[in-house]
Length: 306
Image (tube, rainbow, N blue to C red; front, side, top):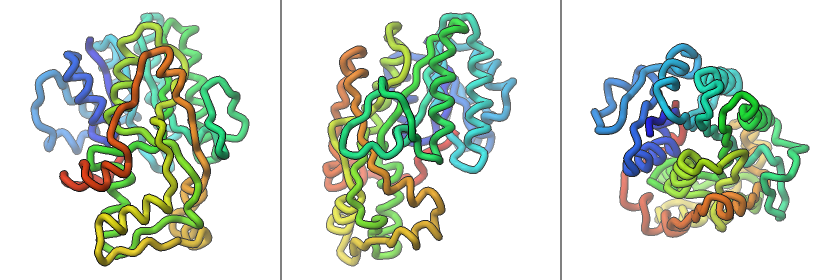
């Protein structure tokens, strides 16, 4: 298949790109123009310079494809607007085609879940304010069925693995400062997903014609930031101490992201497992930190890109 894909220079997207190519698919990868000069020529991959605001480029490239997978995100004050532009441009290109459009959301749309895992069938009543717009976009993509588009939304937990993402950022900061921080008591639990297992779900969402609607992407492993901070201090020391960062101080530095980091966010991925035969088998967070990619490969703290 020919697949239009965003986010391929980021954490989740680069893993998805690799999995799709390994399975014989041809990728039209939207990348920011300043990346083009640094990207190597690769069999099965066409690098397309542009961003989410380039609606004409997005639509024209999507029309060349049999499927679209939207993984990229801007992660700034423009993220909601740019995501809406990308979704609209992709949908316009696929209108009435019967083709699949897989978009990416985030588990914080469920808000603070407490210790009871949330699934896709439950109504979203109190999404985290920073992610409420994603819940609206999710419903929009699923609703594209009325326009002859097979809309699928993937909601990943905290993505780890491949020496990249949030864990890489925590390690780099700890090594630079000697402090491995967690916010508040750090006891809030969060579902996780390895980048390779997530990539496999994207692949199944595209190739399994029965896939539709929303799928949580999470392994059985949940983590808390205090334990992660102590693991980093123990594994990447000596000279690193795990320290609590008072919430008020974290808010001064991070704004609302500090509160987002403190919510409990546990989800069930039973739907993807039962309907698509997806099995998120991958090394655990602890294994990855102690003896996996974070120990054996160059760290890439940046986790997202378009």
